[in-house]
Length: 387
Image (cartoon, rainbow, N blue to C red; front, side):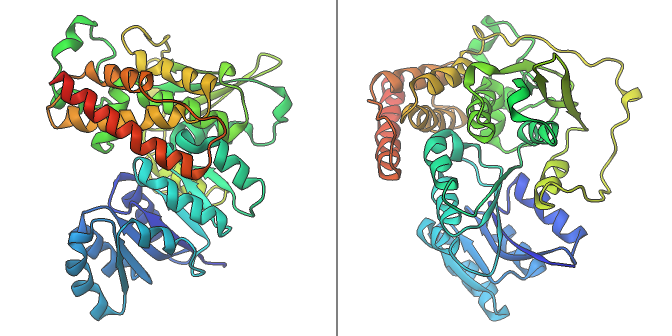
């Protein structure tokens, strides 16, 4: 059997650790060539000792000596910093990269991997949110392919297998509604960080969990779907589905709707992407429909969760507008997690940053880097003014 060697960016996070679960279950199918993490050096060391990659990279350069001292005696090459990670994507000892990191930091490594013809198992939403137009242009001249790892986009991908793209009427992305689905707008005025981190269905990192609470996560998924499936934004919608069993749906021109269902567990979409859209045996818990008395759906409340509408603004305006939204959101979410702003201030920071940052049409990578820097500076200024 052909053994696929992979690189895992963000190996110590939720998607990264579940990816390595699947590698451990299938040692004849998968090998690990590169492991990369942000700052959790002790976890990265333990992963490297188990999976024996050729290279381990820590983004936090202050942790490098710890990494090097632990792994180089074992014959594992080590490196540190974002530049080293980006350069590692051009190595020839792996064919697929799992981009499991969160935020803008996933963009440059993904671009380098595409240029090198690597296949991408994409869990980093921000890559297509920030640079969807640029990534699409690059893919048109590369041998690289992208398979989505997000449960929603994997569901849509699976629903489209065997279908004529011309028959697709709309994409329907499901959302749990997050921890505040049933709270009133008044109740959101004073929610705490602990409240926002109590997701009802999914176990995710802090940043993604806050994005779910604001529904910015769903806005990003709408933008991502536009580029993944070449469907205009006005034919992509979100629907709240509190049980998180239907992961997304596709409606066709004849009115038929196809859905992909499963338990709320990311092993399934990760396994599907690693298997190149071929199904692999799984030891995970199976969905039993009799366990669910009902599956319900409702329209999202965009007045209570205005971040959702930013998806359509981003797609309508195009250019660097999505980059500004992402940058401002990352800064605002970090400030909320640190207790520097309130929950509802997240949207205010994004709106104010958009108002103060000029958009550039058809941006190059350098344009995106510059816009990201400017938007982050503006967002921090706005947060300081709120305080």
